Image (cartoon, rainbow, N blue to C red):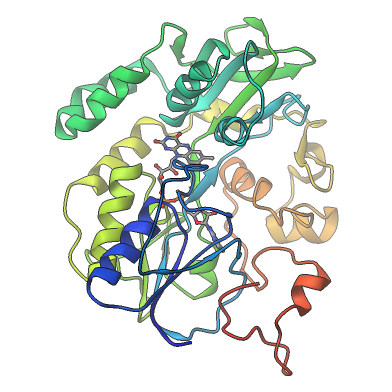
Amino acid sequence: MQYDLIVVGGGPAGMAAARAARDQGERVLLLDDNPGLGGQIWRGREDLRLEGVELGLGHTLTEWRGEAKRLILACGARELLLPFPGWTMPHVVGAGGLQALVKQGLAIQGKRVVVCGSGPLLLAVAANLRKAGAEVPRVAEQAPWEKLLTFGLGLWRWPSKIFEAVGYATSGYRAGLWPVEAWEGGVTLSDGSKINCDYVACGFGLVANGELARLLGCRMNGGLVAVDDWQRTSVEGVYAVGEMTGIGGVEKAEAEGRAAGARQRVTGNWGAFASALAKTFALREELRALATAETIVCRCEDVRWGRIATMGGKRQARLEARCGMGACQARICGPALEWMCGWGPENVRPPLFPLSVREFLRDRDEAGHPPTGHSL
Ligand SMILES: Cc1cc2nc3c(=O)[nH]c(=O)nc-3n(C[C@H](O)[C@H](O)[C@H](O)COP(=O)(O)OP(=O)(O)OC[C@H]3O[C@@H](n4cnc5c(N)ncnc54)[C@H](O)[C@@H]3O)c2cc1C
């Protein structure tokens, strides 16, 4: 089937893009690896619809052999997890990850959760966990108060964000504080405080899911996909929208999606909001030294920091220590090491995600290619 547009990602950005293109009479296919629409923020909502758009849900796009006139990448972002002693213990989880588990039915009622790391997502997670019945004694933000104050004073440019921030306010919020060690039943923070808890929900900001864009040869800019005012990437016919082009929240994602879908110039000053976020929540130097020689860095292959700290780059770490060669294919340790060591990203090769042999063979034509190149 020939489509005018294929959208990869069914979060706010991808949905807005698909809707806008459909409204212009385009034949649109939207793919997402989740079983439902909504992406990260609207995960689990059952009221989301995209009439007039063909949906391929539950499909991970692992390679591209395009059969559409246009492709819009709306692949979102994932959490940055930094290694520190104890971070691989079962009670230490990603902040957004724990929220996703709760949305999918994990019982959190009455559990004590310390939320820590960096970024506004911590506040959203804390508020949502409290709403679900958890006790959140501390939200520890590594950014200093001065930066947060400057950011707050500039929020008049994005009034909707003022209301959002007020809604998330909590007396347990502390700036200039971060986790240094997790132990069974609790966590120690950088001021020496030890807090007993059932979960440590930890995330040091978000990193763009840029692998597909890199596979297609799109120009990148500091881990983000470089785009023009129409959301066009450096590759003809390929657009990128939402968190992939800058971590800026749901309004930015929707504005960019609408623009790309309708082939219009993006409106609003959400790019400036993303820049303000990046500046405010930039990670402090101390975090580079959280891991000790014994700390596991690549949790898939159990590679410890002492084994790779003196290596020259990801390739050497991969070849000599199997760092990044496990099930997640460096999605966790890769961005952490880029930040800790200043290492660049490696080349991306298909398949983008590990496949079982059954998946690899399913739906292939005689030449071994998937029939449309858009799924598997
Ligand atoms: C774990 C997490 C939790 C978050 N929770 C909140 C929150 O509670 N409140 C808030 O304001 N913001 C939250 N955010 C930020 C939120 O993601 C953004 O504000 C905004 O929703 C981003 O929209 P998006 O469409 O760009 O990306 P997303 O919403 O991330 O959507 C991207 C979609 O693309 C899919 N995808 C990616 N690659 C592929 C592929 N190769 N094949 C198929 N599908 C693919 C993903 O599974 C995902 O469904 C969260 C972010 C993360 C990472």
